[in-house]
Length: 348
Image 1 (spheres, rainbow, N blue to C red):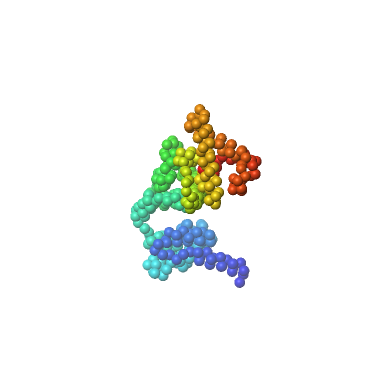
Image 2: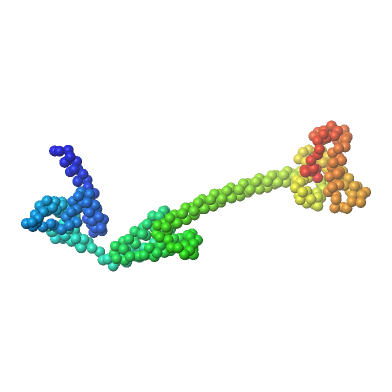
């Protein structure tokens, strides 16, 4: 067999196999595929025109032969994709065009009922904010095209309003913007603007999610720092409570003053009782110096804090007796070399 003939036969078989079997629900799709396949095979002449007639003046032998072949092939291909149960209920026709028309009448639907269903579906459509808004609007346009084929045509302005009504609440500002302007949008312009609006909302949503995540992280950090600070304070308080010394004096106003200035008071030293005794003696010395400075001067009592600073400064500058020096090993020999820091007062 000629290779070209084999290839042609294979191609014809493949195209015919693309035609689905006719059922009670797929007639429209079946008809479209049949017309496409017959058109690609150049066999749709019998569906597009009536049978030519021969006259003595014009025999039309070539046209008649071509039409007969097209009609015969159309009938065979259509019957191949029709189940035996349907084929028995259809009257045999010699014309492929009339055969297709009879099948169409057999599967014809009530146009009024179909138009009502399509219109109800179009009005009930709602965009849920998921997926592609372009495809959603194109689907509504497709339903409008089906209604047009059923002689129920919707104007483009009405379709635009139906699309806007079906958009969710977060498109409210977008709909107000359209209603306040004088110009009307075509369906293509509406699609373009809706796509831009959806992209803008997605960008804003991403930025808000990022800000919320950053805020949550900062909040967790602050909570962690506060918890650590509270834990340290509780630990220090526990250490202070474990000390069983007696005779401590904790002045209320002075503690409040230190708290306002951001100074952390240490009332007792976490060490030996002998060291704590040194701190208590230093505390009494400071109080005596402050009381003496206030009483022997004309300064108001509200400046007792300044007097305390001066007393601490003087004591840190004077020489230390040998006996005290042996008891407090952390002090230098006679005079401290560095300027003292009064932001943290020990032993008060």
